[in-house]
Length: 165
Image 1 (cartoon, rainbow, N blue to C red):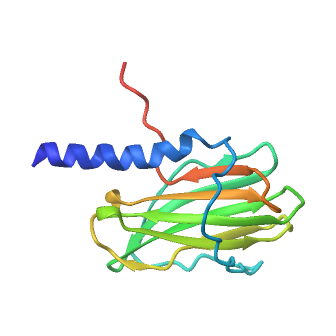
Image 2 (image 1 turned 60 degrees about the vertical axis):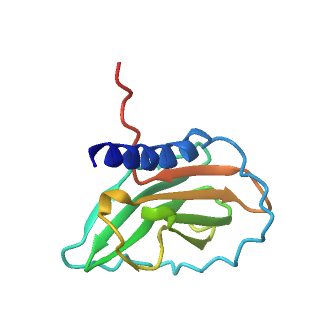
């Protein structure tokens, strides 16, 4: 049983760290078109959930001016991902892709529109029924420039643990 949990933990860590390793790479070509992004109102406020817990990665900033922090939240028998961001690039971004990865390979993706205004915003996945412990979930958000531009920032809910020496 302990070996199984160690293996599961290794898979989750690898799943989160692998996308982070290519943070400066351009996004891969996709065969299926992206769904239209969901507009996020300028006055978007993250609705609090009484008793909810949050596990957030570090606050990151790209040289181009995108700032983000990505979290996994759990409360009320539900789990979801949330990305807090600010677009100080002066240009509209193609979209935010927010992915929540859970136990048994379950993944939920959300595409949110990001305007050119320099205001804080929030992108959030739907709140799904929890299928495991909050620690078994991870979230990643990606911010890309408009017009098939490069990936500007990738943010994850789990910070990388230092490698043992």
